[in-house]
Image 1: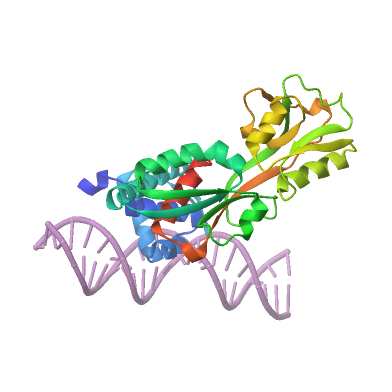
Image 2: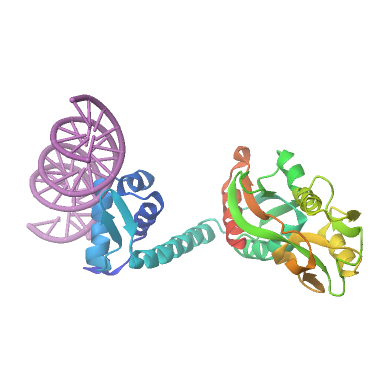
Length: 283
DNA sequence: CCAACTTCCTTTAAAGGCAT
DNA sequence: ATGCCTTTAAAGGAAGTTGG
């Protein structure tokens, strides 16, 4: 009776595995149970615990019902929270170093939140942040976790976020008025730069790369001063810089995939925890 | 196109292990 | 002894494959 009232994490894990694997048998492999046991667990969850139908059974297909979708959201949150409890209470004094590589635009936009949450849970862990272009970062072997930008269709690692590049300039800057149009971009080995130049050339726009820097802060300073336009992730644009609309004659830019790479040679509990915080921080 | 066969998958029933 | 959870075995449904 008593356990019919509670949502056992084991049962929720099985439920999430079914939703993710699309079948009871494959879910059983994931959670190390036989399909029959999985079936029984779900029967109990549906009939005794929640008294709601969670799956649409259609031949060999299993789909979540609307109520199943609702449970899936809660189940993931419950399991994630449970993981946090374990991490926080079982490894509160975890020490060591975690080395993160990231382009500096992501560092500015996402790392403050990620690192402050991480520091609250693991105050004794030393964090090294190495900023460089995606191309350079991918060549390095000394990083535990690397955040990089990849073209769609060319993904490696785990997808953190998809975001469109946009044109941006100072409030009073009019991109049509200056030819060649001055552009401020990252250094040559940045993916973003190649995309930007290709888009401008495809549109036949006369431009010149007036400023380059590996530093986002420097590029924003140049753009804020009204000296050039730039192409950056939409979420980075703020302050006195505005996003240029399509009617201003500039080509649409591609969507960037932000990916997380893990160094398989240096996996540790610290790295795994930091990876979880990064994944959450990019949502 | 269709029937026979195979494969995949879930459910049910029976039985055993384990903790209370 | 009881209740819960598991496994194994068997049954049955649906989809895919094969051959005429």
